[in-house]
Amino acid sequence: MIEGRPRGLAGIWHGFCSRLTPDGRIDRIVAEGEDDSVTEYRFLASKEDVAVADERFRFVPPAGVEVVTGGSINNGVRSLHPINGSAE
Image (cartoon, rainbow, N blue to C red; front, side, top):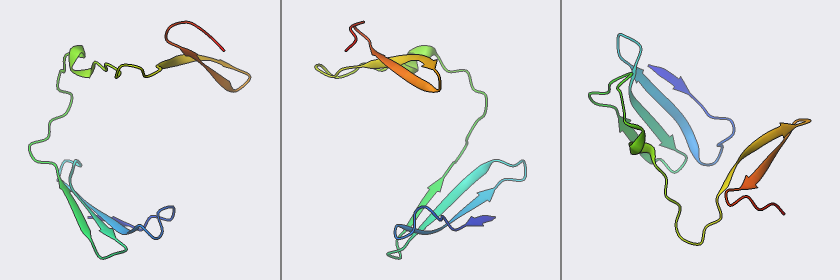
């Protein structure tokens, strides 16, 4: 078991606990809220390095939403460009 207390989430989460399998994979995470709530995640039958087709990761933005693609980094500043090519 690995336990931790988040510093940056004070007032929301009290602590986290993770259980590892003998081969080092996380199979359970328990989050304890400041309000005494408990949220548990279990990873049953998880697999590593499974081939997944690229089309499973296709994102289609809703109509009317402006989509911005990654640009270049210039002197530490990353510039973004609208997907339609117009720049403001």
